[in-house]
Amino acid sequence: MTLRAAALLALVAFGVHEARYLIVPDVHANAGHGYLSAVPVLLALALAFALGRSLTTVGRPALARRGPSWGACSAALLAIHGGQEGLERVLAGGGPFDAGLLVVVPLCIVGGLVVCALLRRTERLLEAAVAAGALPRPRISAPATIASGAPLRVPAPSGMARHLAGRSPPTLG
Image 1 (cartoon, rainbow, N blue to C red):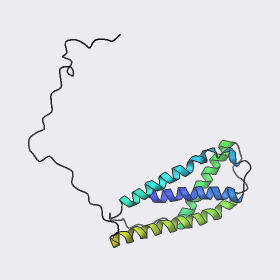
Image 2 (image 1 turned 120 degrees about the vertical axis):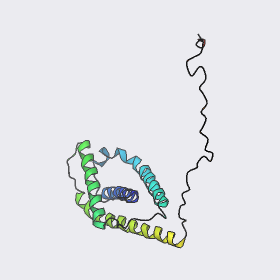
Image 3 (image 1 turned 90 degrees about the horizontal axis):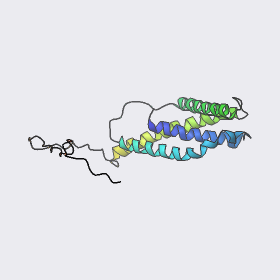
Image 4 (image 1 turned 180 degrees about the vertical axis):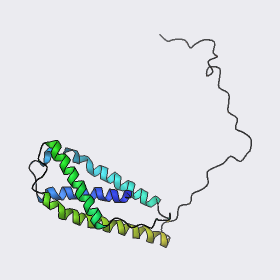
């Protein structure tokens, strides 16, 4: 799985979570959701890293591989949501299931379709940008070398560094 796919899955999983609680509110939801205030910032960072990673791989020969299918994306979203909600409910002292559980399945299917479509679209956009010359291929230069054949002269350490000083420094006291 690429960083781009992981970031998109995390973003859509957060969207599924939020949509589930908008559609079927839970009166006990606030007990286990205190940590969610930091999630948007973390998702923005993950998407920024994914974008940077995508741009650094432009022009490199791509491996002949297909992205994940919509079924795999939907199953991943369902597993993420199930694990997250299960852990939240256990830590908050609730039961393992709630009233909005069945709403999550269609939300995960739609989310899986969205992730799959976005991954395929970004691949096509990056390939088209490289083919059109809009994004230059990165050129990696050779590392710098020392032109002279003379060995490097390392300066000898001072007397204090070799513990040859006559006395220690005075104490301030």
